Length: 123
Image (cartoon, rainbow, N blue to C red; front, side):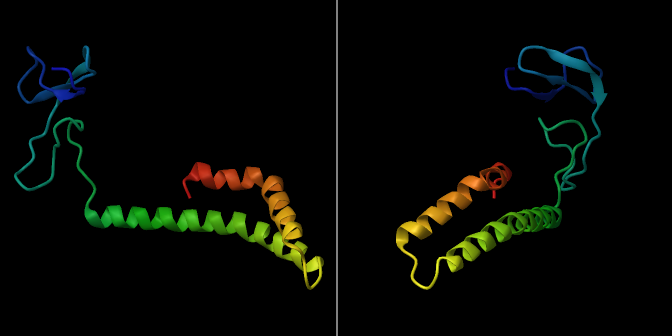
C-alpha cells in the first residue's frame, strides 16, 4: 500500500480507518460511518465521513468566487484606466503612438503592485 489515504489498518477494530501517509500510519483509528447506497457518503481515500458538495453548492460557491474576483478587478482597474484616459486627453487632439505607449507603460509601472494582485488572485 503506497498511496496516501484512509484505510483499515491490520489489527484495528472493524469499521475504523486511520490515515496512511504513504510510509506509515498516522494517528489513532477513527470510526468510519457506513454510507447508504446512493447517499454520497464516505468516499474512500478522502477521509472518514466526508461528503462531497452538491452540484448546486459548487455552482453557488463558483458564483460567489466570480463576484468577489470581479469586484476586486473593477476596484483595481477602474482607477488605472481612468488615469490613463486623463493622461491621453491631456496630450491634445492628436497624440503620437509613442506618447500613448509611454503613458500606458508608465501606468503599468506605477501600478505594478496593484496589477500583480490580480495575477496572484488568478484573475
